[in-house]
Each structure stands twice: as C-alpha cells, then as structure tokens.
Length: 309
Image (tube, rainbow, N blue to C red; front, side):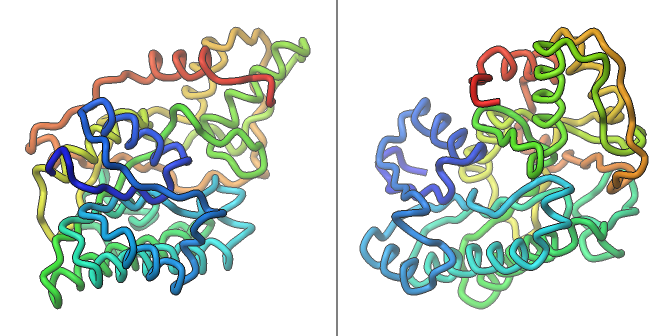
C-alpha cells in the first residue's frame, strides 16, 4: 500500500477503527479519509454511493459495525442483523463500483460454529450451528465474508476478510448493558473498589474459555494483511492462548485492586464454551502479537477515563 494512497477507514471512532488510524499514522500514511456516523450513514445506500463517487479511495478498511456483548447481541437481534448487513453491503459494493484497489473486511470469531473443533481453523466456517445468542450478528458477518469472496470471483476484486478474536483496548465500550466481558468486568471491579463493596457479580458459571487480543496488535495485523495477503479465504487473527472467564475476572480484580469476592450468576448465559482461534496462517505470514494480556489490561485500566463510569 503506497504511503500517499487515499485510505478510507469505516468506523474510525470505534475501538478497532481508531487503532487502525493510529497504526497507519505511525507508519507514515497521511491521506486518510473518515466520516462520523452523523456525516455518513453507512446503512444508507445512496449516501454511501455518493461518498465513494466523490472521494474515490484507493484502499478501504471496514471496521464499522453494530456491536455489543452477549446481552446486546441477544436483545437487539433484528437491529444487529439489519444494520451490519447494510453497512457491509453498501461499503463493499461501492468499493467495487468505484474501483478500490484493496479492501479489508473485519468480522468476528462468532462466525464459527458453537461446537467447532479447537483451536478453530478457518475451514470450520459453515460446518455447524452457531451460538444462538449471537446468531444474527454472526450471520451478518458471514454474509460480509461471502460478499468479499464472491466479488473476487465475479469481478476480480482484491477484497479480503479477517476474523479477530475477542478484542480490548483504548476506546472500548464500558456500557454495562452492551459491552463485552473484559471492559464490563473492569468497570464493575473499579466501581466496587471505590465504593468499598464486598463482592462483584460475574455473569455465567465462569468456566467458558476465551481468547483476548489487544486492539493495537490487531491494527498491526490489518496493515500486515493489506500488504501481504490476497487469498479468498478468511484469515484468523488471534492471540494464541485462552483462559476461563473466572481466570479473566481474577486477573482484572488483581490489576484494579479490588479485595472482595466473586459471585457467579449461573442464571446468565455462558455463550460458546470455548473459542480459541487457530492463527497459524497469519503467523506464517510473519505477524505475531506483542502485547501480553496482563500488560494490556493494566495499560488500558491506567489510561481509561474513569470519570465517565
């Protein structure tokens, strides 16, 4: 990717999009294009068409999505399916129509079957039922993958897709109703510490295993893929090891400095029992994560603006 190329980052204010911008700027890419959702509604086909006709970006990163944790995924099922389908369809189609050189679509590890063999290889896609709580979101992301594949097949577009594991980092969402497990626990433990509470509730049994990747490592992977990958098959981007939700909670509890007890609410859903990605293909391309989980969580906790909590 040429340093002077015009690069459009969809979803630039989110955790992933902002990390991609930081990485691109640090590497000397300065011709970056982005719009807020108020300036450009990506679910509006006409608006997206006009944007691409006027801007004509050379490269596109699709980090825009309607996202949330297990609760939000389960409650806003129709909204998550519709909005994600519209965003990816409009951006991918307009990228084709305007002659974009290369596009990277970012999905999610939830695209894989609930009981996929571990670690999850890219070939597991569409081999079994999805986890029911996030099925609509997963179906939308699978559609995005297939759009990239079929536009490559029919039109020769160099559109690729990458599936990151669970992410955390700067600009995460800390809304307790809609956030993912790591930021939610961080906020809960901080609140409990400053209010001298005796316990913190953790959703589910604590036994599911999860893999976590710092978003800055993902941003580096995205740039690496744009420059080194042009395969029709989606590619996993993971950390390489996992831990139980209980172990995650104990890690965050220690970093935050909360002294009370953990209470596991078994009435809340656990989700998929285990989701460890097989990231051997991207490692073979020369990318490896650099930020270990404890250092990453500590850095996020120390830098986040807790006054909003």
